[in-house]
Length: 496
Image (cartoon, rainbow, N blue to C red; front, side, top):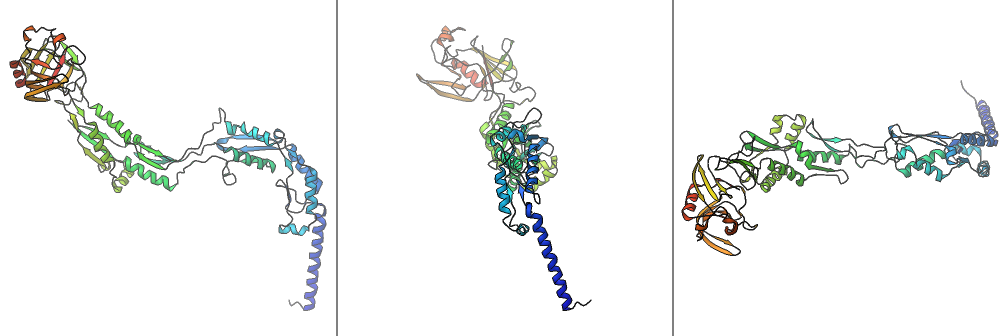
């Protein structure tokens, strides 16, 4: 259909009349009402008369309750009466109403006359006190307050490697933010406050310092497993092996989420190695021993036996741990912690000993000495006995250390350490050349010839007042016999 110019003029005029009429209607409607977009503390009063708006808000205040929802099903209720919630001065509200109506209602449609009136007041002191006593802050028997825990690296005993443990957000409130969020909700007469809504309340709970998806944490996991994936194995002999592996190394790795560091604690590695060394140490243990008289006694102390060199084993272990395993070997073991894949991460070592015994008996440590070839010093009898191939082949009298703390011959099980045909023995107040020196202790005690002229005064108690400086004194021929019959490494039992 074709519209003529005349017809167009008529239609345009009709539209203009309709628009003007609508505008007059809008103006008339809002002449005694709040303009669109008007709120009392965010309570929408648009289109209400002044009296209706005041009545609505006052009614809301009288019955007001705020339900606060926290984490872990925590809840708190606050009533308006508890915090002296009240309607503000009507004069202030009326001033806002009158000021709004000095402007055209049409500006409200374009954001020019939107009004938000603070229509309520409350006691901040009472609100603060209420929130301090809240179960969401203090907790109770059924609602425990837990602080946030950072995501970290932990050892998974089933997977046999370090995994990322997700953070625990906890339910520990940032009290300032909690107060502010609650105050905002009350002032806007909201009926609910959801503290778990992280979009609208992002800072109301104290946050963990590190989250599971942090790239730094992933790098920390890589470092952790590079330390962890070592199998250091010592072959102790007789089919016995000792292994330092992930199950023990996990306790030697320190993860610091605050500093974002993963460190291998040498002190903790050394503690494990100390236990390892002590496990195979036989020096100083009590050994059951049959004396020359056939009596069975226990002799402890001394330095005979096995002892792993602690300093050397630390050095070899730390050297192995500082070597980063091949990435392919790590990946294979993470996928399948099998014995086969473990072998690719294995470092084989031999134990370094600072002292050795005759043999290692893993079921009974005291059986570490040569029961067929040894010597015996009976301090009570003041006699020496030498055994070869299980038989007593020589015995003689002796004079041992004087019975004073600085000269006594100490008991225990030792070994022959050194043999010299001649030697000069020195001390603070003596320098004596001697022959047939057979060292028993590194402190200076040994079998040797003594040219002393009191051999004719010998008795089992003579040593108590006229004893040596700790050595086992012998006559020339006896010293020669002991020298020839004993060998380096032979046990020496010294007892009363």
